[in-house]
Image (cartoon, rainbow, N blue to C red):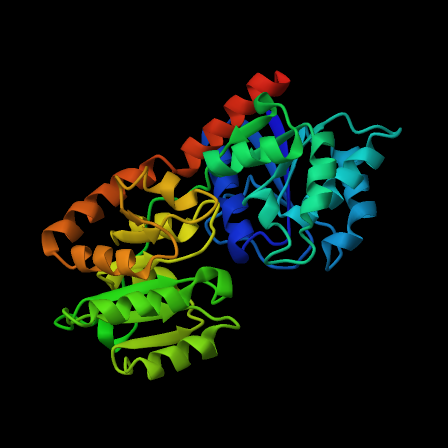
Length: 371
């Protein structure tokens, strides 16, 4: 079988871990790859990860200190392909791969994953330097990206050959859990429709724009807004809600353990982010029957996920008036039912098996690897 290794911070926590573990699940289900998650944290793997997916601990707490142990792993285990995730981990992986190819030699290939436009590197994480990415990505054997826009941007920004860059969407497994009791009083049956927004409360997520749009919706419609998540912009959001007289109609919740329960009980999810290379929260909401309203974020993720607005309402970014119009349209029961059903259809294209098959096809074409 093809022997794959993924370098990621954790097998179970944060967005990158979810992507890797779900892709490993799909690879295991195809039976065409032997997969190892190489991580630099002590977090346990998710309970649903099959036992044939191996977890290798590097024994360090930061990726910047993992080069020696990663070199030893590559030389000893000889995976056919190492795929690194997060920009700063890409830098470390490339350095380790270069060192591991010095005898005793690792003979495999390294792919770097790029999840956003290269020019947006460093915006959210100071270790993600766009100039370093532009300079060294060409030394990788290939690149994977979650949306066509991000793939094409990386090819152009870093001077890569188009054939070296693969489109591998972020997987979303079919929801097999149980929709429990409403996790918030506003989500109880008989209450007014509730829009939810889920994510880290950072400036780039433009929660301020969402609150402005919701204030416009409230002029003509009885609805509520729950902003689920934590981050530095939460106090600003709370102050904006108070200032606009939305107390009792809009609320921030802080961190919650199971965001899918909020989406499952909500009328619709609204995504207002300035940039997003995929927007995993959209497919997660769709998987539990929650229709989506989204801004056309820089990075092209929401446009790709909704297929230009076919599977969810897509509006220009930075436009609270258009966002408010789409939210009001989604309040119509027949519109909501239409997009809820389309959402179920859309997530089938992003199943772990489908995404794993896309990756295997690329490895076969690019490197001649065969299961």
